[in-house]
Length: 94
Image 1 (cartoon, one colour):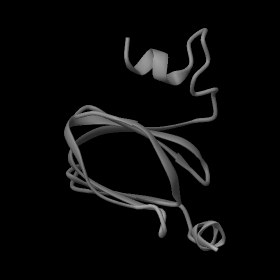
Image 2 (spheres, rainbow, N blue to C red; image 1 turned 45 degrees about the horizontal axis):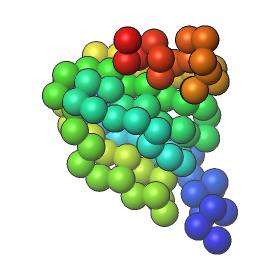
Image 3 (cartoon, rainbow, N blue to C red; image 1 turned 120 degrees about the horizontal axis):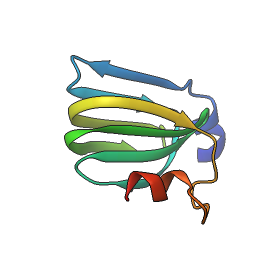
Image 4 (cartoon, rainbow, N blue to C red; image 1 turned 30 degrees about the vertical axis):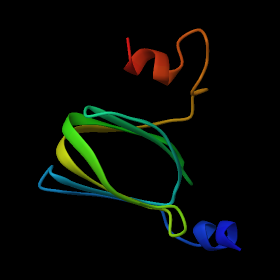
């Protein structure tokens, strides 16, 4: 039931004044630290980069992630996240 509910939400990314970040349609947070959040969404892998980023709320039932910090970039990728030869996680954390 929760899976059906999550799939009914639209995917959106809202960044308010580069400080408040809200992502809907989130299925899973793959990785995060104070500079990067990597999450699976209904539209692919989303990577948010910035400074002093902190996840304030993660609601898996509703598929909502809320964070605060200084957002510098947002990137979508459909690459293999754990690809041994240079997947996105390998590039992010080098």
